[in-house]
Image (cartoon, rainbow, N blue to C red):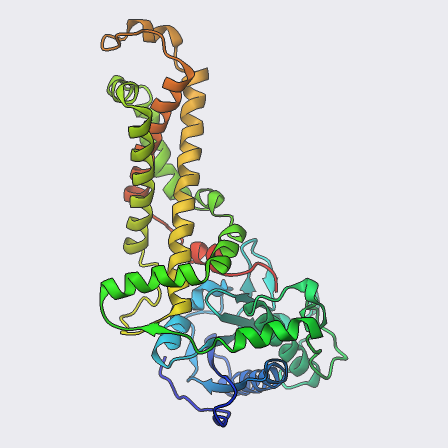
Length: 405
């Protein structure tokens, strides 16, 4: 996307914090671009006017050139992250709004008007649900007053989520629904306004440029400064269940272990390992699998080379890595549960008394857990190396985007 940056607002006198918002247009083939572009610019202007009053900050809007999509199929908001992240570090923008005319879907494949990523500071708005009522053929006009003010309300609502406000905060943060009689943006409640002002004052943020060691240290420092939002994102991501959304990864992890669990060599090694060695092998393998997937699948932001990375982009990278670690732990538990079930219910117990390399023919629960843990660790490594992640966008969506507007 080529940036045709056009600042909508002038810089203030320097006393108020300045927040730069980038607006990207992603349109389906054959769409008349001008109305969509005008809609996006007007909606963002209406939205930042309300936000400026709530935050006492100077909001500046910068509009990029339209970006054509390959088709009109529905998309998850994570599919717009690469372009948004690249603009955020190159321009730079503090927040990015993506406006598209294709349907926008959640992790449950529900169609929604818009979604926000508080961590990535990206808001995605779709005109599809704003223009068409579910079950109705008649479409609203893009330039109608109802669409204009509902879109502005939705944008402010999503920006509220970016600033960590929630539906319980009332006012414009109440769950969004299209109101055909709406002609203004509802205000923020008084108790949340002070919170917004504090967060707005922290923008723009610190950044770092060249050097891998400097970037690694910057990522660690960013995590130390902002553990709360990383933890909150990790908790709402349902990362332990991620292997169930990635069947190729799970299959590559489980299949070889079905052979190993009946292998004498695997039992020999597992029974003769210490508990500490087994635990360290499992932890090291889980972290190694997460690092492998992070680099091979190119999950770092931004994907294209950039000399500058901002603090919140570093937090995105740290969070994605933490989610991969938790997901690999979930995969380890999944494979381990299957192995223990086979050991207890399928594996012939009397077979152990005739095992040639076993000095003590009695095998207790601790031994079974140790063998299962050793085999499961090999399964995690096999899954990461052979299976990989077939849906990178699904991981990013689970990691970064709320599932409700």
